[in-house]
Length: 217
Length: 217
Image (cartoon, rainbow over all chains, first blue to last red; front, side, top):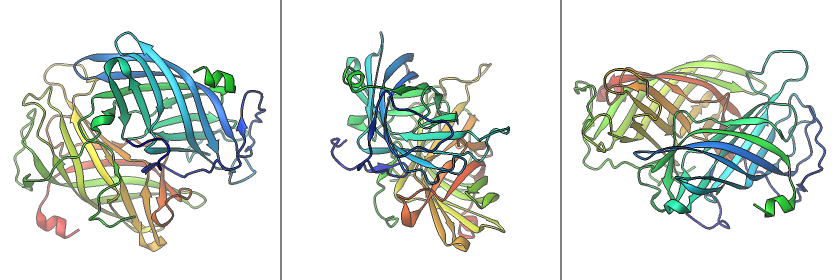
């Protein structure tokens, strides 16, 4: 593990600059079917994650918090052909359950968490503009002080949102594409066997939030 | 990109030593429902992969070749509780189609491709011993000399085999857990936008192969 000012050693996709890109908060207008100018989206988020701890049990935890996502210049002004690249530059989600205690999820500074929004190769058939698919590969830290553990995923968590009709896809449900189990490693012993697994992750992107709401997290 | 003698910068799971671990070839006996001693499995493999190149087309290619997988000491002698960790230490698969030409898939030396075999948290219900789940996170290079391209995935390809009743799971069908698209980047411009995508990957593990068959690839 390195401190958050260091350069990530693992980059899951295309880096996106934050230079000169405005922060966008509550009140920002979003136009459907329209590729927007670059921005840093400050959005609420909720998630329901299930953790399996071998020999101990399986626990489902409700999280809420915020994310900050920087978006690139779209590759086209036209919705159907536009691609937008994203980096998750900050995340804080907090949840709690009796057995695991309070859990805080933040970004792993060793990873650049990256994503993109594009028209899928297998779009829904139908009338009108094609909805886009949003995907992001995320490296996270799960801090579990009650257990004295900080856990990290070494394979990215692939978060997907389908049927995207506006950017950002605020209010849309999404899913962590976890096939049966995603290993989590103790950050103090990253090269040892995993100590826990995420077995399910379902999230909902919130709308634009405020500086005050983020600071209160 | 670095040469293959360098240390990987991205490690997807638990490293497994090859020190003192015997190479296993054609003729090796495999006992079902039995955690085996460590070995390097030299296995045939076939795969059917679909590539999407934006603005150009979608192409499905049949691959065949081999993999070399080192397996750890099982964590238990008992099948039901045993976990086995794996590293993919070599891969060569070759396929061809008219539009993309000959494609050779090898391991990305910047990544340590890692996996594990364990009883899933959601096993099939039923009589008798529980089948295991096998998963591996792979960083690969797709060499396409006809197009003058060498492509790499920056998110691992998650290969899974279900219903594993013996180790190695020779003869079993498996799947790349790709949700709609897995981005591929030009290795000369890794931080640029992806230039192609894998949209589907279905493979079958072969049995133990021979030194001669591997050399002929």
